[in-house]
Image (cartoon, rainbow, N blue to C red; front, side, top):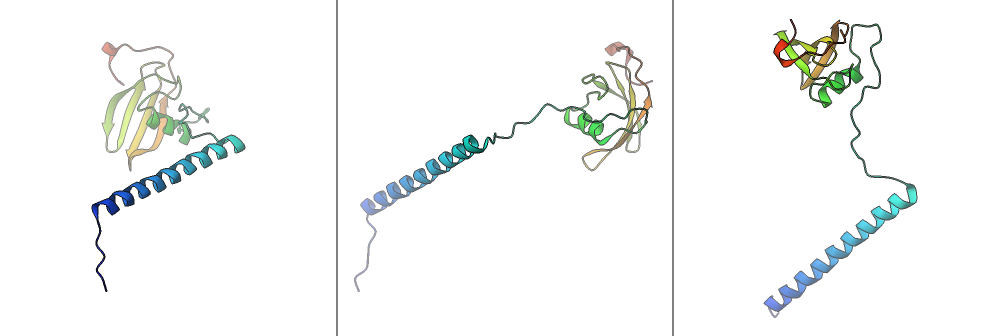
Length: 137
């Protein structure tokens, strides 16, 4: 039997063939995705603005939607939709926070990378705080 050798020219053409094959697969993939989007009206997922879908009316416990809003917005008030939550006294896994926008006070318990539960300490006062006034009393 004769030994088969690989020549540099053969490797060149093998590389060209593989590049063309992968390029064709990529183009077919792009075409199919666009066709599917146009035909079935499927749009790529775009992250929506975080918003509170369920509010805790007359209850002290925060709803899951309110807790998630605080997590996603990195510390904004679910009552006035955007006031910064100022850190107050803390103990154990809990922390009191006060909204600088509306004056609402919350007690939040943190754990497992998020807010486990939260409750209202008082109703929103409706006044805004200045940075000099500081966090929760």
